[in-house]
Amino acid sequence: MKEVHLIAKLADLQEVDYHNTLVLHALIELLVAKGLLTHDELTEKVNELDTQLTFHIDTYTKLTESIASRQAGIKPSL
Image 1 (cartoon, one colour):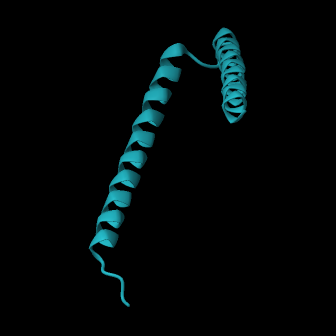
Image 2: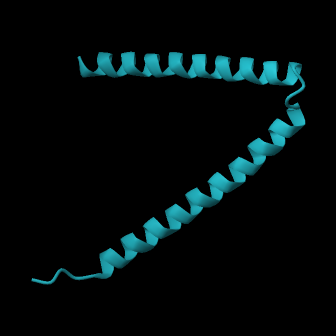
């Protein structure tokens, strides 16, 4: 029963993802059509945000690994 519930949740997520993608695409096309945004500007911004996010994820991962290795080396005080 849990498996069926999980599959249903995944299907719902895929549907939501599809609709979000559709809305995003429509908004981009409208902004481009009205001359408020170009595809090049959008691509540049996407790359900028991706670089920033990747940096933050890498930093978080390194910090997490550092904390975990320090905690593994600390003996519990009993």
